Length: 64
Image 1 (spheres, rainbow, N blue to C red):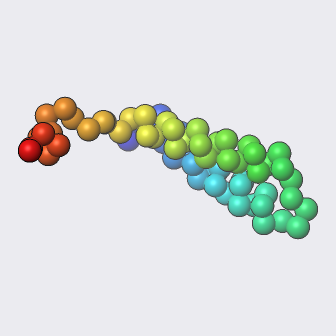
Image 2 (spheres, rainbow, N blue to C red):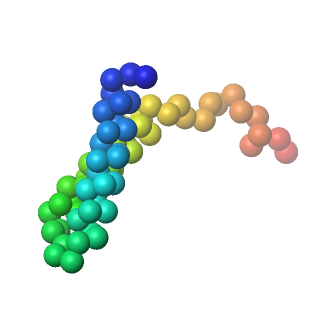
C-alpha cells in the first residue's frame, strides 16, 4: 500500500466518523459536519483518482 492510499483511507474513516458524530448530537455543530464531509470527499476523490479507466480495447460496444 502506498502512502497516499493510506492517507486517503484515513481521511475517509475520520471524515465519516466526524460527520456521523456531528450529526448525531442534539446540539448539531454544522462546522464539524462540513469538515467531516469535506474530509470524506477528499479521501474518496484521492482513491478514485487512482482507479484506472475503462480501456479503449474493449470491443463490447462495437459489435453490431
